[in-house]
Image 1 (tube, one colour):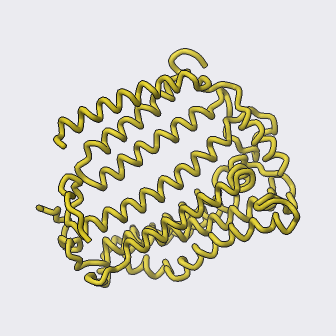
Image 2: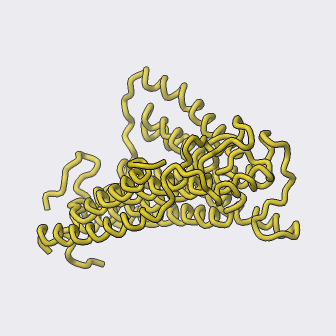
Image 3: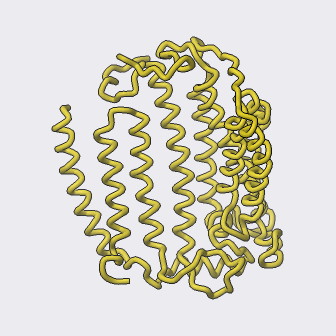
Length: 257
Length: 118
């Protein structure tokens, strides 16, 4: 297909899509409207279960089963990326080179690494109280750890990143979510229903099952994202020698074809 | 809210979707294609948040606000969170596939990927 043909086809399809989109938007409630029946019911249910952060309540209590699916997608994607980016038979691992870093950068990393990790842990732990939660805090934890790469080099990152432990933590946390759902069944309610003591509104141990599932998700997201990034970084830094490898370590030489 | 602001956020979401699709249709680099897919997908964030917005509403977190304070719709916010997580994982998986394609075919230009190879 030539470029002109393709653009023409896209233009027609885009015009049709835009038309239907506009027609659909006419039927939507006006932006900023005061009527949110689902939202009001979700807020009511959340306050009833002593969870200050309504979004955490929706995710880990009211829609916990959907979040189990979402978390399984995350787990499957980490698994898939690990499979796709494994070292192939015709590739070899090279020891990453030590890099020279300015002392001020190194100091910056050494000071800020614990601070970012603490921030991540805080965001995870207060998921049921304040904006944040397992998903957000997990990403903060995972990306914060990579300060070790920015402020030092890949060898240092490999030392602060025990991949075997994180692989197991990822799987264990994903399993923990599934098993925690059984608490509801034991109490005689349905799977993943919030039957634990609800605690005092606004305290760290409030919301029943919410902070526990939240913590499991935090561990899973943090270890999953670290493992995922490790696979990609390994490809860039360590793995070389494949058939289509145009010398990824030597220079950013683009394929001439 | 009436006038232009009543429908502008929905139109912006549609525009982001079309821009992303345009990029997908004309892309000459698979990494760029994956980025365009992420752009197209981010239109759903705008759409969902626009549907859930309430004029004068605050964030649906009651640690500081008194119960009864008008808040924006928390259900769509939770949906957007799910959306972002799934979007990020799909992007990661697609980029892993692009790395494999680059290794096996020596190119990331979809125009040059014409043959099947084991």
